[in-house]
Amino acid sequence: MTLVAAAVCPHPPLLVPEIAGGEPVAVREPAIQAVRRLVAGAPDLVVVVGDAPWTQPCAAGESGTLAGYGVPLSVTLGRAAGSCVPAPAPNRPTLPLSLTVGAWLLGQTSWEGAVTGFGVSATTSAADAARIGAELARSAERVALLVMGDSSARRTVGAPGGFDSRAAAHDGAVAAALAGGDAAALLRLDPGLSRELMAAGRASWQVLAGASLAVTTHDQDTTMSDTHTWSWTSRAEYVAAPYGVGYVVAVWERGSS
Image 1 (cartoon, rainbow, N blue to C red):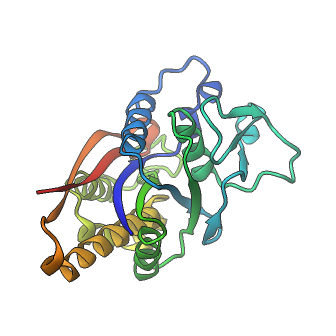
Image 2 (spheres, rainbow, N blue to C red; image 1 turned 135 degrees about the vertical axis):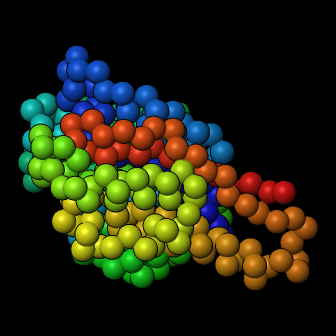
């Protein structure tokens, strides 16, 4: 049981065309392509991880609404392509925005296999996030993570949180760690600073770090019986800060050598 791949994407509602209207959204296509690549390896389970008001799992079939963004749509976790439907009654949706957008991205692929979600609170410590990641990596024989998370929302004066001079350096470190597959760097992200910068992805990225480190530890423990070694390849497909918010799309893949 191990992690075999991960895709990292931001979760602005504008990724969904019905929300964006005719506005061009440059991050949309890289995000969709990253998720298509994630499922192309035919994992046994896809887990969508994202920021939430609580820390707990979400089951396939749960829904989230985008009605708060001006369009009465809901998205169901695990629904096939064409996942947007008229919004259900207000008391039914349970997914937070991050998992709702993640479910929409997954719905743009041909994925029809097993899927679950996991919401991670912004108050989750790095150690707890890493532990969650290790547990998720062991939840099926071949696990793929779709990790949803925005960087800081304070890159410009017009950003949602206004300008903070620390935001660019923070986002640069995040982008470098995600592009380089650097789990240790992700675990060094300061939860307090990330909250001040409104970086909603911090805990979710640290879940990814814990999952990847669990794979490395497992490999070290089984080296004597393995006929090959495993390594990660990683790259960033998109790095920018439209609207004053940092967005990164990255892909991590596990391969043998």
